[in-house]
Length: 166
Image (cartoon, rainbow, N blue to C red; front, side, top):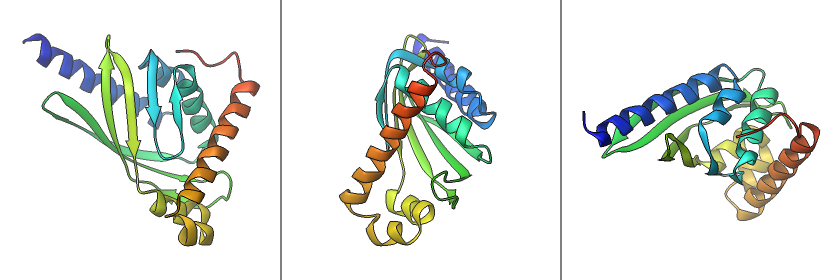
């Protein structure tokens, strides 16, 4: 097997293990899948390094009723994932079924770049109800949710400062 195929197979196995760990809420294993210089972005967060581990720790800890299905794909050496978490949004208690597409880049056998994309308006309608329905398509609500998520993460990091490491 040539090196490119070997790397692709290893990367697919890494992402498979990552999402299986997420299903088990094993944030410690998830954190080990990232390179120390990793970058993560989705509709709520833009994070680097140890912040990523803290985010997964927070989401696993708060997502007690979370279930998730996923599939992994590869095309031209690029590894992607489609994952669908179902959970109660902690701030409102409303049920959410999110549909997320993820893209990954790798360095030294670990995730160096992870981008999650989902329909923010769809998510906000489920998570926030009427405010999401009316304002979920606006940058105003997106920015407010992002600031709140980042603030919640920083509060979580301070409370758990010795428990997260890449």
